[in-house]
Amino acid sequence: MQGHGEARSYRDPTSRTPSLGAYSRYPHPSQVRLARNQAHAGYCLVILREHVTDMGHLTTDQLRGFWDDAERAGRAIDSVYSPRKIDYLVMGHRMPHLHAHVFPQHSHDDPKRDVDIADGPVLPSADDLRGGVHALRRAWSAIATGPAER
Image (cartoon, rainbow, N blue to C red):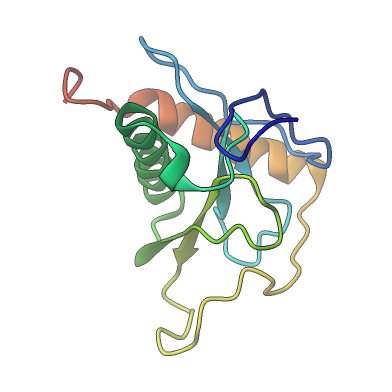
């Protein structure tokens, strides 16, 4: 039986949205997916590839890699969708697998309203989702990450 901190490979069997992919000179610990619900255009999930339920179970390097991926996803979202702010949420009570919600707040969103990842739903067509993924993938590839690349 695996303990909470033990790593095993993770695949999201429920996702119907292609991964943005990770294109750089070093391996990325996470996959980034455009959420199916696009009530907040650009909303993505950064999902750790290894099964870990809590950030406290990661090494310093793993944690740094996970947050580097989340930050890079936020910069890609900013480049493509130009939100006024991006929120980074890590919860995990419904899905006990480490992941971050990278949640853009746009100018038409009420800044006094609590963030709700269940807003909508707004379910774009498969072609629109693919277009969003391709635009984010191009932005992701153009963004340098890590101290050696900045």
